[in-house]
Length: 97
Length: 114
Length: 312
Image: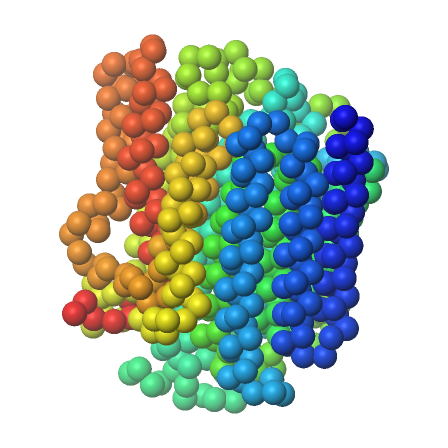
């Protein structure tokens, strides 16, 4: 049972890391602010979600698990809000800013 | 070379050197402040890395240096905040934040508030 | 494996420090510094200093970063003129040689320091039982070296007084900082309504857990002050005029309570900040609870800056 959970953790965290890598590649390769936000927002939120999911079987106690999920939700909220603020500022500054 | 305290100690030595270089070379006061904060964090890491070799006693690290470090980080923040406020006031008063003895290009910039 | 992670963190720290020093654009340099602060928190975790990591992430990276980013935005107009004063090559070379010498000397110290460092950890372990707290760092901060913490709180207060006294004469006693006018239906106002309830819970949790686990009043106060700042930036709250009497009373209440407990210690336990037998934990909690609101206000107002508007 614990081996299965360990494998689940490794697979899930690795998949999360892959999404972080994809998001970073997108940040470096995509041409403008809006596509940067697109790459970072999608990939990093999913990446962190998978990392948290993978770590859940490793924590002891319900409370620690809830804390991990809370971290993910707060990052989602902050990421979404900041993405929109950056996009709005970029649109106001014009296409070449 | 492989143990963490030595690694971070060497890293801290390099950070302090980088900060010192930036502090001397960068003409902008705000960048000097930034470089000074890099020096400060390097000193903290150096302190923490050397102290890490102390007795652990089942706790993570030695609690006395760590308590001093927390105090140090807060005091560094207080000093940075005061420096930023000084800079902003200087910019308000003089329209420039040069640290040169006399601003050669615009000799009358400090006369505005007289 | 852990060694590889540590080497990666150290390399990234060096890269970000170079970026912070060398980047052309000041704003970009400061963004690098914030990332550097967060990475430094990871380094502290690797050095087994979770309390230090929390403080570095909250204050070293977070608050200092916001402070510097706002200053960079206000000073942007002066950037080009300052950059023209870049020192000539011989000066830069001399600076590089000197900085290299500093690094070499310190590296030598790190490599040549043999054996375990002198430590007070056994003394802490022997006496922590008398304080009633389980987090040794909190025991050091509030019992064994309580004088440091008292002076630290007073240094923060002095910094705030220093920031305030930089206001022009006619604005003395006014409201700090500019009034933020955010779109009331915008995403920032939305975030500033949604996040503070969560942030306040987290702040108090970090504060309270500090007795037994990593955390404490400075980290908790930073999170609470950040929630206040968020509400200010979203235009939902305004900073109070600094001449308000309640504000000034609240700012000194924490350090004053700390001093009062310390002075009482002279009579009861025979030393300034001495705690009588069995009452240590109760007195530590009294000091922390009294200090927390003062710290939140002090940190929030230091971030808000010097008065820029009249009190009306």
